[in-house]
Amino acid sequence: MEGRRLTGIVLLIISAFTGTLAFRLATPAIAFYTRDTLSASMLAVSIVSMSFVLARAFSSVFGGFILEKRKSLLHIGGIAMMGNALAVHLYPLTSSWFQVAGIKLLNGFLNGLSWPMAQFVVAVATPKDIRARVTAVYFFFGSIASLLGNYAYAYTIDIGLSGQMWISSVFFVLTGLIMITSYLLLNNWVVPRREKKGSQGPSLDPRKVLVIASLMAVIVAFTSGEITYVYVSEALGLEKGETATLLGWVGFFASLMSYFASWFADRVSEVGMIKLTTVLAGISPLLAAVKSAPTVFLGIFLALFAFQSFRPISRKVLASYHRSSLAIGGVNGVQNLSTFIGGVFFGLAYSVGEIHAGVTLNGALLAFSPVSIALLLQALRLKGGG
Image (cartoon, rainbow, N blue to C red; front, top):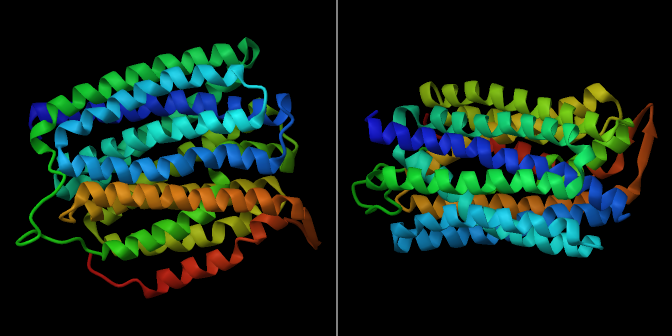
């Protein structure tokens, strides 16, 4: 790739690292602050988590839409990322989980503007024959940051929520500046909308991609945000720092393995890999429902691997669509809205408690079984080229 193009893409990959580090440091800190300091119920914790993804769902679509109108508006994404630096300082000032949820809405709106735009630019600026792999590297650097962010939380517990938010704030500002620089470098390769006539279409119907994205996001919602930390800590009796560290490693290995899934999609079959990730996502909550460390972490690993493998492949597929920016913003929006639904459902079902049938099962995760079946049926119906 040309030097300017390569530099811009590398900068966006770096932004995935710095931005995720900022976010992942804040996530467990806010989770345990809400649960322990503010004495919130599990339903309240899930609402806090899902208010973020609900706001992100709508702003993702909005961002894709405005980018179609004028590609110069791409820089809004970098500015929105820096807005998070101010928002996180509001968390230590809260006195109720409801206030935390309100700030999470603001964070979600800002992230919905920034991240889908970055994913879109990575996808369209990268040559098609390596697009899924480069996008996977982008997400992988985010997973490395997720691991380090969890470690950072574990090692900064003593400085308190306010001190942790200062660290997070610095990385949010840095991420926004990196994003804006990369967009200036990649401006010539950013084409939010192309003429439909004569353009090569995607290997899968975008509507099928959206359906699978929606079902998968509902199911893997139990691995999203604050609710995951609280569930694992309480189900397995782990300390806060230990929980954050272990979940960081699970996410890291899931993302590392997802690169090989992207290689398969680039070189062999996009559809085949989407089928596999759909099946793995479908069985993940059933495994995680079994109350033991191996099954809980294996279920979380499969959910994360499936989701993190599906993300770059779906972005590659949708980048070939003539309305690529809106399609990528749309799939982000659908995933976030579905994650909101799945997360709130998990919080509501958490009161079901445990079911004892030879092994101890979490009733809330078993309640996802109908969605698992629907997802597995989608995998059976998938047809298409490589």
